[in-house]
Length: 217
Image (cartoon, rainbow, N blue to C red; front, side, top):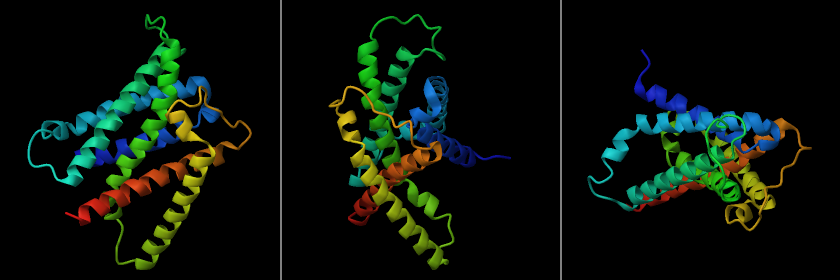
């Protein structure tokens, strides 16, 4: 029988993959972007239901610095997803086109532009702060394998940071750019890999931020 923990892992993996494709609009196009986004919203609801205990414990127990940071990151993920999902529904031309929504398109477009990148960053940091759970599943006795994977992860994270800067994503996050610019000439596989590299950058930051805070407690 499949355990709740296994379901959580599967949901998180699918959400991570969906996030990579959501940030590759030039690969999916309007229609599939909306369907993947709708699927992400559904998975996010399932994810929160599976982790309902976190909400119940929100006002219980002591708050260490580590718990404070993780709580803030979790809440920022929640806000970013809600804003991105809402704005996506308002702008929908396929999945939610049946809803009687009129007006607010200009605001929704800006909200979606900034919110999607903030969601990408905060979700990646959130994933990084829980990365230890995945690392523990590896056989730590295989030090050579671990070191190779660590070096590869660092290299990909550095590459992702360079891509993040070159794409001027921070300008989109703070609405200094009114429109997102998409590269329709780069092969789809490379675009997904580049998104993975940028995700790795923030996973790396979240992971080592979490480790650094934990060591000081």
